[in-house]
Image 1: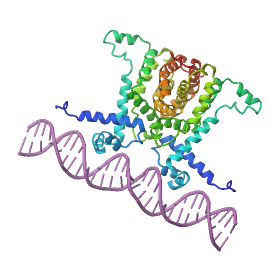
Image 2: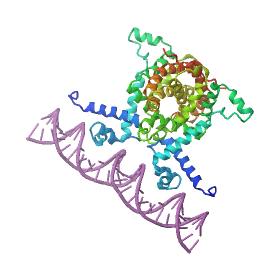
Image 3: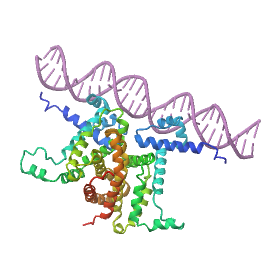
Image 4: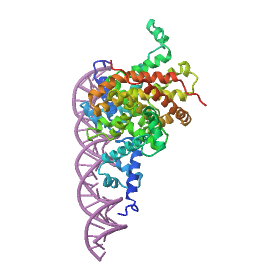
Length: 219
Length: 219
DNA sequence: ACGTTGACTTACCGATCGGTAGGTGTCAAG
DNA sequence: CTTGACACCTACCGATCGGTAAGTCAACGT
């Protein structure tokens, strides 16, 4: 098994990368597998050979994203290491959550793609969920919920409130990256640049405000 | 011109209504004009007869939405009327903005459709903007910006900051309606119901926090 | 009675969709 | 040298896409 030399794994990755870029830009129905393949200098049958169906390719893209988002979390679990992990564990869960959300808005192209896909998936899910069994992004949201539950003022709130709060925060955070290119198109690059410089701090203020406010007391 | 009896105008409206519902649910590329027509008991050629192209139909849907969103604004302009308009004028622009955003989250099906379309348009715009001249929703955003500029603490901020702030707020507000059905699908109707009860107040807190914070000072 | 207009139809068009069938070429193991 | 696995190909499928052409049909003004 000298598959380390074999370029096949790398091709698979290139396929998923290109699929992610195009799905993010145009949406599931807005891209054909032939277009994805053409971008790679291949035919659509090469894609179908590796993934079987367009739906499965899309699913793999989303699963990869969920993993990436989870990996952005400041990790306190494997606290066996040493100093730095101990520090992370010492941070309050509220701060960890802040850091996690902040880590999501580093303005890399990859991050923009992730946000766009996240948003699109939430928009399209109810339609496509009828054809697909489970939701690709649920593991990520579950992990996220567990962290918020460790915030003292939120620990007693029902699950629904935690999820509502997190979806709201995620929406706000992702919306930034999503609206970026559109803003650039409408108002020009200069305005977009200024807005980008502002967004990060503004978003952090918002997250702080929501977390501080705590859950709404059920009347 | 006894077109009051003629059902044609009504048919046009029915077409736009159905188009809005389906575009909101599945996106521009996710629906065909034949599907829209089938839902109305017509053929796709009936739609093409009225609107020429799919793109134009979509554009009319968005223009109608922009008008509706603008009309949700508490109106201080035509302050010639009497008492109630005077009251509205007396409300600070910050409160007007709050009210406007709040008015957007009344949980009607129409409102959910509007939010979904708004979000989809922001996602798709950069792709489709290459084929279409201008942006259908710009009038709405302009009106919105003008109102924020009348808030004292924001009046001196550059346009870019106002637009950034508004896009952020709009995103948060609309995200609520958009994520609703997905949440319902994932966590069940009961959780979704609880979350819905929470969202309105949470959103208002967030808006308040962002408005109070004021623009970020350019360093 | 006649012509016009507008709503809506059937009948198409070429292009493209996702997916299947059946290859070809390469490479490594036996 | 053969065999099998794998990556990727051409060729093709039926369905559907947005859009065009040429009508049919009822209601209208004259």
